[in-house]
Amino acid sequence: MTKYWIPLQDRKPGHFFECDGICLSDWRQGDIWTFANERAHLGATVGVEPRYFMSINSIRDDVWDSLP
Image (tube, rainbow, N blue to C red; front, side):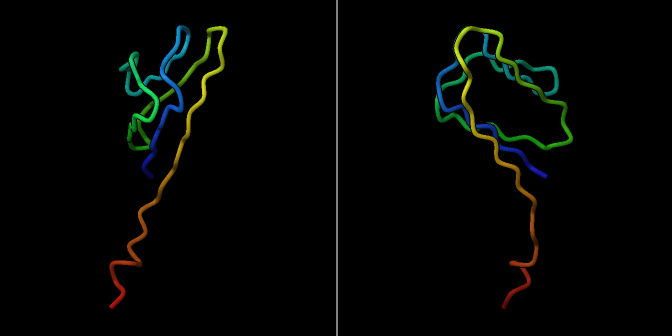
């Protein structure tokens, strides 16, 4: 499974996202980060403003490759 993480706003103080021990600390609205679901990842909001993002999970489906 592949995950896509898309912030819907620029990063603000107290907003965090981490994947495999690497902290993303300077994202912009509309950036797209992709990673395998098996990789350790986490997010946190410890500031005073809410953190908005979109998360998309995808599974590769090879059925389309076999169509004539």
